[in-house]
Image 1: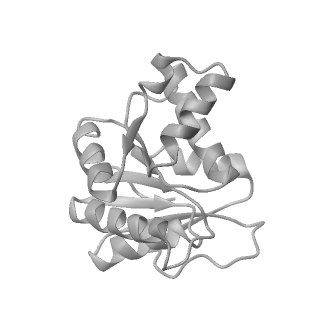
Image 2: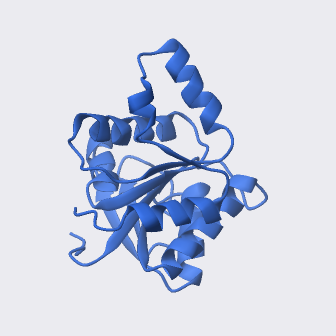
Image 3: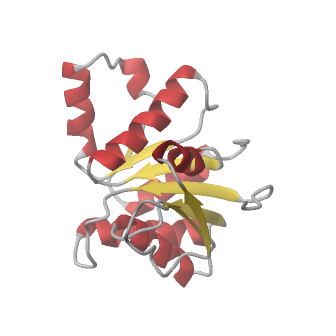
Length: 184
């Protein structure tokens, strides 16, 4: 078990398929760096792409990085983790990614990222989680959320639980400002 009593943990979600040349990788690396400099511990799913980039950025600034990995996955976790928590089931993994965090940032990804955002967002909507920032980083998210509003039952009040950021600097500023006083 990871000791987190005094740590401020931010979970970063995003796609595993991005390489060092992608804008998502660059943004995630900068985000990890900025948040580590601000004293946050980074938590990710522990593998490649956005998860690796955020971990690398944090480690370059001397930050701590948790990776919540799955025993069922055949891939190796990224080499920048300082701590690893292995889980057997997807829901356990999601719970570990969510329950300790004072805030969340999601970059572009696939259905895993959508699942992660959806679960956090639903927990915020229903009050299972006290209010904390859920930042959607990148220009794709406004269109995705607008589509959800047009095609699903997503209200303006639901959308008000989200923050949108165009870059890592803006996302880190939102996390720093809105996570003050969040208790986990």
